[in-house]
Length: 612
Image (cartoon, rainbow, N blue to C red):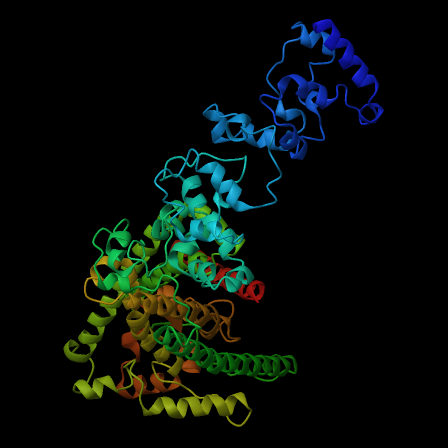
């Protein structure tokens, strides 16, 4: 009987030239003659493997007679022969580590059909082992996929089909990055979000937050990511009582990181859009106010700087031409004699200001411009965002120290000093005070006339109007930057009695005011003190407290005349000049600070250009 069947089979193969032309060593119908009890002919022919034939996978079967007599054993199929890409991905996957092979998922190998990108088939396959509690299936993603929405996230959108990586320890960089990066893949697609009626600025607003900026800088393990608030699989709309972002559950959700989170704290807008006037009016008007402050301040002082730069250049050229023509240069007797403008505590205060300001700028600007490569490089130099945060807070502490010193010195000037005549109000608005007075109006008018060649350059008293502005700006800055900075430094404390959206407001104020401060210092202040033609490349008086008699009379003639009338000029004469070592060290420090500030200014300009 067996011999008869072999003869019939051989004749059948010989009588099938079409199969032979297709390169099929053995006709599949021949195989099905014995294996029809396990493999359904119509299902196999309709499958993705139906056109390959049996020997396309069972390559060891080359002689039918030897196979049917048991001489050729059928080995396990090696899928890698055809599916090289999928096999390579699977080889490095978490499934391979747990000895899960191709057939464990593709068990219907003889009837398998092409999935046609239908995510429902992926989910159906994955839930055979995973999601036993239907966490994903009951989520907003799972329900949408089950309804046929191919935009919704299925298992393969986050974990891929074959290159499934182990999630690993939740505290690791890879894990923390994964739990946010996979969400952005879909939620950054604004067209997809729009056609599905989903909030389409989620990624943008996240990236503008402290959490998002740290993620972009490369430190996702230090901040909250998408899955920390929305969970990985049980993603539900906020209106659902079971949702992790439902108002009733927010204290627990926020409390995962902010251990002392309160209900007011949870009023924070995690995706607050400051350009959305309708939904976030407080953020909108805060942003408008800060933008207006930025534009108006820079508009006034940049014009002032440009006019001064041009007029100073013209005057220098005229002076050089006059000297070349043999004109007599105005000489002041003992013009190089040194006089004291600042004492030691003033010099110390200025050193604290320089150190803290540059430290704050160096660690704060990378966070402001977190999308820039130079920002990532700076963070790497600091040893990470955590170290940068520590440095930033130390410098903030120094800021509070010198601000307290300024308050103390102001109180001492107004109420305690014996060498300043007059009562409190007379001292406050007197010539030795940094408080603006009526004289400043005439000084501003005089400078404008000089700028436009309508009058001589005015002579000043002890303090100029731009120096007074710098001093007053410290008080405003401490209120704006210092106050908002403290809120962001101690969110749990302030969140115990302030609504959470106050932190959104504080973030806008802190960021924009810091931008105003750095931009102003590195352009306007640097020019007023070091860059103007009369002082370029640097005014050293801030480090040794001394200036020559020539500079004293040229720059602050009214103060010199007042001192002469009071007969106290010699009281301010420097007993000795600063030493060579002192000058070398502090001039080096000064130039380093100046160079650092200018470098940061150029990086800021580059970042704005790149973002536009």
